[in-house]
Image (tube, each protein chain N blue to C red):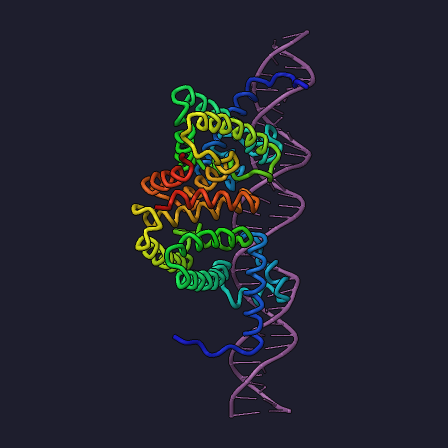
Length: 183
Length: 183
DNA sequence: CAGGATGATGAGTGGTGACTCATGTTAGGG
DNA sequence: CCCTAACATGAGTCACCACTCATCATCCTG
């Protein structure tokens, strides 16, 4: 099950590759080449493929990291104010998506990628928790279901990046969207 | 300005290519290969490139067609019921997008493609007309602006395809979305 | 600090897709 | 019916990209 520990240089390179990949994919989308990731990490292509056998494995690793950060943020928000956490979290993710294409890939790749599906399920649970609390606080429309929230979130993230919304338009649009969810 | 008329066989092939391209791009998205379009049209690749010098030119031709059909539909709806035409049109386009990826490309390619931008502007005018009528009928929230409507529409279309919403989820999600727009 | 194991390298492979062009084919005016 | 301009053909070019592997470098353990 557990692999022998990595050599010091290998551990360093793995970290560099992950950091470089996060940057590159955020800037150019997931279609950016592995070569570009290697260049940014100051490493040869072969090294990237030694650590991540396929490009998809590299993506999955980044997604996992992103998902952890998002879950942590959701819990912090819920601790502050249960009634509005769902709405704040929603708006935050969209803001996040505006600058990092990786979020969109995480949300959009449902069904196309086993690894990503697992991350999505985890994010779904996080949203479910926020939705339940919002329902108890009666701040959300009583008939709104989890899949609708995820659908709207995906849609907003897709839109903000694909159509290049301005910050102002993004905020107004998300406000309209959340209006549809409120009690 | 005006080119000499096409030969009979050239006219026939042009029509076949357009029909095949519409099918192929709807099924596999705009990343489908020109070779696939040629195969489906029963024509050699060279012929496709003779009629449409770049793949983008081919896409633009299809978009123009799509945009005309959508505009016609919008006017038909407005003639029936000015108060609800905006909402019905919105839902119709999303339903359309669920089966034909071309709609998404039309909406999403804003800013990336001059030809497509012209089609989008035309569609924007159509939506503006519907929005104005809905405002007069007071069926839409008074502060909703055109760019928000376009943004929400883009988002819904992106979402329905990218995330593979079921028909049921699609209808519920669009309903929530329209709730945010109503007076 | 020697030597084997682990890791890094980057030219190479195979595959795909947009676009070209020399060659062959046809429409349709005279 | 013939001839030529317009058109069709499809193998070939070029560029890109995911992924491999023989060779070389580095770590680290005894």
